[in-house]
Image (cartoon, rainbow, N blue to C red; front, top):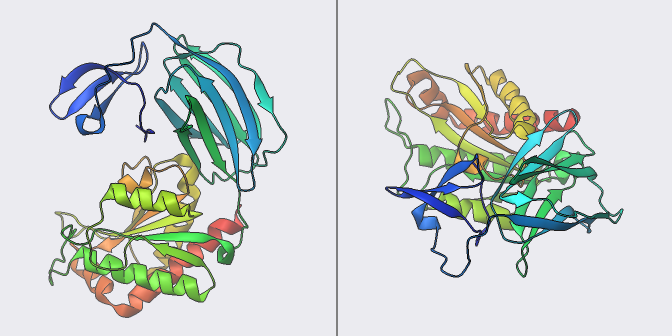
Length: 338
């Protein structure tokens, strides 16, 4: 459903094996792993929680919307298109004398307003100035119960001026898929493709970051936290596909949030120039590294290890270089459309 900041108040209403069911509002519920929760014996139950003053402002790098609340409560966010926007639903919140102070220092935020869409769900609307979503991050102020929505501004629309993160899928004990005829491992070849992409981007003057540079175990949580600390302009995650049907082959790209789809579309179109079968552009995909909202991201399933024809291409060093070139060109195509 979404990533949440730490130390939020959740109301548990049921228990299922490793998960709790939590009541977000009168009509909304969700599930969360028990391992990610801790019983709170201090906070007393209340019939409602109120919001108060807002502030909209910017610093040297980001724009911000802050909202003072009675308690640190759960939320979810969604992208809107035409015009580009972000909506944030605050669960368990009732609006109360919301003064929205706007300092005039925000550069990406165009308008901010709210609706009380249910008695205990307040919806925040943030309209953006540019059509491309460049990322947002929601958290609570470390010293208060103030919700902070951080909006990334549009960077320079030249590929060489971007900071691009590259994720080589799997690694260490997480071997991924295996080749049909040669039993080569996905973890080894995603790193080969990532290295080729990294070398090409650096030759073109692009600043890069790789989540792994060796055959090591790195959890998805650690990768996400690592990327959050780096704050890239975009992420390319590289994987190799597999199917029980050996005739299935081709390339595909994946996104979770609609605002990040344009990047995945242009990369797919470039990858198809390699003679690969079109396996599709897949949306609403629940892959761990498609989950962060902080930066546009694209998962590329380069080809199928379970297909003998694709497997042969995957092992070809020249093909690895050509994939790097097409992904780079796909990024540049995306920027030209903005």
